[in-house]
Amino acid sequence: MGSPVFTGPTFDAPIVDTKTGRLTRPWFLALQSLWNPDPEVTVSGASPFAFTVNQPGALLVSGGTVSSITFKRTTTTALGITSGFIPCSTGDVITVTYSAAPTMVFFPR
Image (cartoon, rainbow, N blue to C red; front, side, top):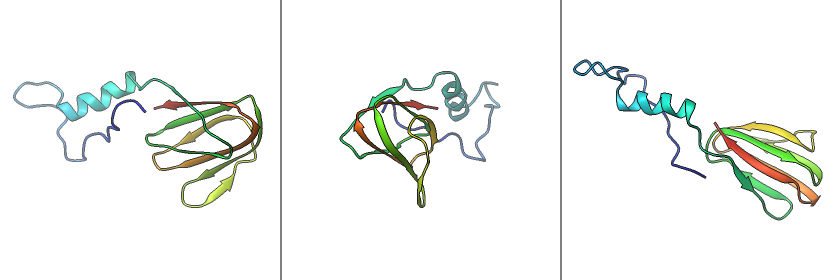
């Protein structure tokens, strides 16, 4: 999905280059990513479809005939919904079980 994940500057990274007075590259990239997120991506697969998140964002599930959506970070949790936006972080697994395929779109942060 899109470009490689940018993790941001480290805690000790200077914000401004003292010689040039400009933002340092790590901070420039971090701030730029706030205004220029990766484009949304349509995802699909056979039921039950397990989507492993590779960058922070939200998965939108709409339409189709969905019987369950589960969310796994450290344990698996049934969300009790069959559609909607699901905020997620890198490594989370969203599993959608359906009899008629829904539209699933991932929106990176």
